[in-house]
Each structure stands twice: as C-alpha cells, then as structure tokens.
Length: 285
Image (cartoon, rainbow, N blue to C red):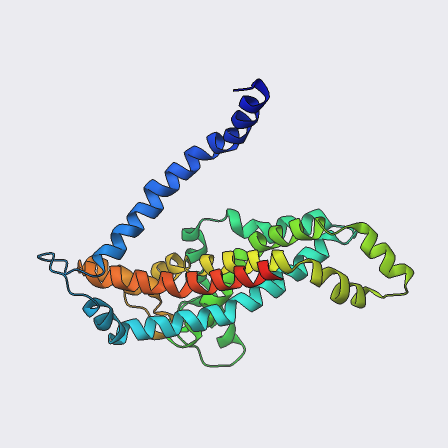
C-alpha cells in the first residue's frame, strides 16, 4: 500500500480515536440501558411474562400519569418561550457596549453557581405561611396565603426555572451572536436600518440554528426541575406542580418497574420524534 494512502487512512481514523471514549461511555451508560428499558416495557416485572402493549395501556389510563403529563406540558409551554425570550434579551444587553456589562453578566450567571438546596431554603423563607412574602402582604393589609400549596406553586416553580437557567441559555445565545459577521451589521447601517430593524432582519435570522439548540436543551433542562419541586413539597405536592418526575419517583419507590419503563419509552418517543422531524426539515432547507 502506498505511503500516502496509509497516511490518509490513519488521519481518517484519528478523529474516531478521540471520540472513542465518549462513544463508549454513551453506549455503556445511555444506549444500552435505554435498550433494556425498551425491552422491559413489553414484559411484566414479576415473572418476566411478555404482555405486549398492556403496560402502555395501564400507563395511559393512569390518572396520575395524565395529571403529570398535563402539568409538564403546561410547564414547558409557559417556561420555554419565556426563558428563550428573556435569555436572548439578556445576551443582547451583554453584547452591547455599556458600563457595568461584566457586573450584569455575573449577576445573570450567579444562579448557576447556587446549590439547589440553598435555592429551596431561600424559597421557603420567602413563600412559607410565616415567610417574608406573607409578612410583607400582611403589612400592606392583605390576607396571607400558603403560596406553595395552592395554584400559585406552579408560578413559583416557573420563576425558579427561569431564574436558574437564564444564565445557561444566555451563554448559548452569546455564542450565536458572536458568530454573526460584523459586515452584515455594517451593511445594514449603511442602508439606513435602525437598531430594531437590524435585530429583526439581521440578528434573528442568523440565530435560527442557535434557537434550535437552545430550545432542545431548555426542554431537556425543564425535566430537571424535579429537585426544586421535590425539596419544597415532597413526594405528593400540590397538584399544579405534580410533574413527571414525581410520578417516576413514586413508581420507583413502589418498584412498579414495568410502568416506569413504558412511560419512559412514551416520553422519549414524544421528544425524540419531533426533534428528528425538525432536524430533517432544517437539513432540507
């Protein structure tokens, strides 16, 4: 074999050598366990009897599952657009040359460094019946309320998620903004475009790929809000914040493995299929 051909082959293999540890870890800790979950979703946990779609039917008919799905979808529909808009606005402000920009960036990123347990302790101090918020409400002459055991608990959770994840999404938007060529802005200004026109007709179109990434990662992160809700309200919170994670935790405690497996496959499919369709449409364009 010619020397040049051997060099080309070795260079083609080199990237795979760097990727091998990550690919092996992904296969070992993600793909293989998920394949096992898919298999278990069609079997009975005790006895290992094949039951087909029976586990999926039981999950779908579960009132707790429907409540958790409804609350999770509501949470995503409220949080994701709000988080994306607010984090993009924060990123645009950071990129603007104004005094105190570094302080502003640090303030937005600070919640990422605060442990969840500390956040929960702060929320309890604020929102519990004897908390600071009720004391302020009482001083103003209004009636106090149990914020975490009423429908208001949902909005406390929404605020927590947005406050905690704005800095993370802002960094993603900043990466996208840094990739926009300055020549586009200069050409737009030469043509007489104002700041608002530049934002809508130059910045936003160039951020489509970043918006896709931010959307997917924000949805994934929305499933991690369980820690806050669980530490605040325990296993059985107010029904407005009874999320999928609560349901899975309760099924895990009761060792209802077949329902957990079936529900995992259903949720994974509901997220994966739209993402695949979205990616294919983007690639066609």
